Image (tube, rainbow, N blue to C red):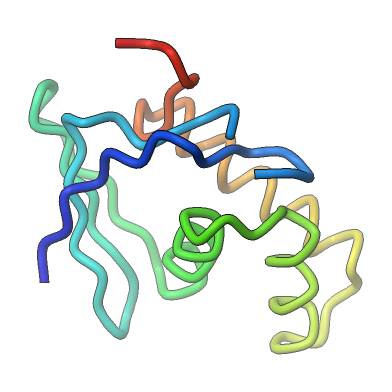
Length: 105
């Protein structure tokens, strides 16, 4: 399933709204992960299932802490490590141009 991602009120922070998915990015979520296509740059970003869960939680308005708690319990890792990993993944999405500041055109 291809989903156009142009959410305007999602953030990377303890409270979700500072960042959003650019209108030029589409995604396909599946059991093994997700594939993101930046149509403007012609680039593709592939994520495993954990990355897809992080992004889906984020897009659903969950905080980094909430997502990390779920992942920590699932994978049996320390909460602080899970929070770091979650925040780093979302930051990488920003660096790849798959998340942008709200208000940017």
